[in-house]
Structure formats: C-alpha cells, structure tokens
Image (cartoon, rainbow, N blue to C red; front, side, top):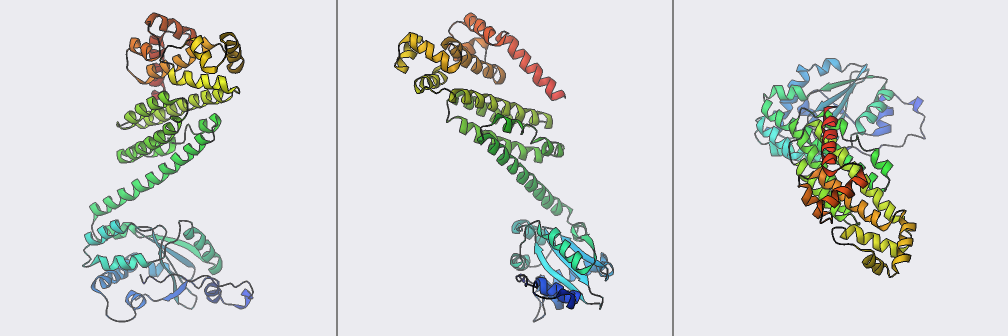
Length: 422
C-alpha cells in the first residue's frame, strides 16, 4: 500500500476512442491505473530499504496471492476485485500482452484505525503503527464506488469480474480467531447501529409531518432489523438503545404541547421497558404501541388546533394541563372572559361537545394510559385524573369507554398477550 491518491479522470470526450488501444483508453479516461508487478516489494517500495513491518506485510501478501491463486485467476479474460478486511478493495487485471495493471488499494469506508491496529498487533507485526500511517494515507471512496467502477472497467476491458474475498484467509493465516471475532462483532454492531439510526431519523421525520397516516406507515419499520438479529443479544440491545432515542426525541417534542403529562408517562414507561431484555416480538409490539399512543396524542392536538376562537382554545389548553384539579363552568368561563351561558354555547360550537363531556374525555383518556402502562390501583388513578369519588369515576369511565376501569385493564393486557403470541 503506497498511499497514492488517484488523480482526477482525464476528459476524453474530444478524442476518437476507436483510435486508442484498450489500455490507452482506460488510462486516458481515469489516469487511475498504475502498472504493477507481482513482486510486491518492487511495486510498493521501489527505493531504499524496507521497514521491517512493511517487509512482513509484503511477504504476507505475496504468500496470499500464491495460496489463493490470484495469479492464475488473473487471465486476459478476467478482472479481479480483491476484498480485504476493514472495507479495503483492490482491482487487478492483465493485458493481452501479459502486463498487469492495478487500481491502487482504497477504503470504501473510513477505516477504524483502532480496530485495524488491534488486528495488526495481534497478528505479530513488529511495528504496526508504521503500517497504520500508510493505511491512513490511502484514499477513501464511498460504498457505491466499487460497483460503479467495476461496471466501468468490465465494459472498457471486456472482461468478466471475479471477486476474491481475503478476509477468511487472512484471519485463518494469522490464526487469530478471537481477534477476528472481536473485529467482526464490532463491525456487525456498527452496521446495526447505522441501520437503526436511519430508522429513528425516518420515524422522527414522519412524526414531524404531523400526519397520523405517515406515522402509521412506520408501524413495521423496525420489524426486519429486529427479526434479522433475533438471535443476537448485542444486536437487540443496540436496537433497544436506538428505540429509546426515538421515544426520547418524540416525547420531548410532545412535552412542548398541551399533552405534557401523557408525554412524560410515555417517556417513563417506554424508557423503563426498553432498558429490560426484551424478546424480538416484544420489541416490535412495544414500538407499535408507542406509535399508536403518539398518533392518539397527535390527533388530539390536531382537534385542539381546529378550535378557531382563541378564547375557547385557551380554555381547552387549560383543561389539558389542569384536568386533575376541580374544573367548573364558572371558573372556565371566567378564563375565557365570557358569560357562562354564551361560553357553554360557544365551547360546544368550537369543539363539537359539551364542556362536561370534553373534561370527561380528557380525564378518561389519561386514565386509560395509566391503566395500560401503570400498576397503580384504580382508586389512586381516579384521584390522579381529578375524581375524588371512585364510584363516580367508574360511572364516568363506563360512559366514555363502555366498560369499567378494571375490565379495560384486563382487556388491554389480554390483547397485548395475544399480539405477542402472533
């Protein structure tokens, strides 16, 4: 690895490509190819004495080329793509005249120098830091570069692409299974984290559209990643961490609106839940339930946003923030600066329901969340929702939900268990 950064491709649009030979065309189009010989020492270090660590690497590569029969594979009809560990790629091909050409080694992702150094030190290289300095000088192209460049080369050279994966050989050759496993796990978890981060961004973007439909479309967004890693506890742990990030971002945003108590309850419940070791089915179900609650709060916010009269909007927001307190027609009409009779009429016109029904709905909606996510006794829940009389709370709950609080709690948990079994 000599660290030569490829030059910018030459413009050959004004030349007659038919007048050029294949190799001339490639060189003119890219100026990326360097003539290479099989003696790695001569190619990579043409002058002066080799550093000890460099010489060890060249001997290792010479042996690898021989064992994997890359020289035999690299015929005039083949284009060779060699994959090294740590996202390092290298193209090689031979002309009809027998000359070898290579596209210098490059990274398809910025290398993790710490992990690469660990592998080199475990492999017994005397001074791996010297090699790391060379590795850092290599060019880095994004992951789309290799397939794009291979397609161009196969077309220009008329050769068939043959891929040689050296990762297994290298790890077997240096007899470092434990080191390889450490590196592989690190890379694998990084891959999961990258995919999970994109999912969180997608879900949050859907939430910010304020569209329940857009958020419903994300119900199954975690399913593929969770199922793929169903047997990997570290992978599921990583997914749980990113789900916690999603919950925190959305609930923090919800806290800004009038649903502060509900948002805090969701944050507390799901943060605690996702800290536990969850099965793949439980993780998927947890996420769907979270989004369903977010959609409900979102719809409630949109309904509140439909209230056009600022006086009624002020009172509606006040109810959402103070529903645990005693709320009377007189006090709320004073909040609006209106007479009681006119306020009642205007409130129903703006919200589509009477004041008492609106207050009951807000309180019972919160009670449902407490019954769903908390093991708090029903008597205590009635107090937390603004009801001093538990019997009255039960009657109000039945009016709104069609069942008693106890029946609701049993039903919702039965549905949860059935969902997990599916």
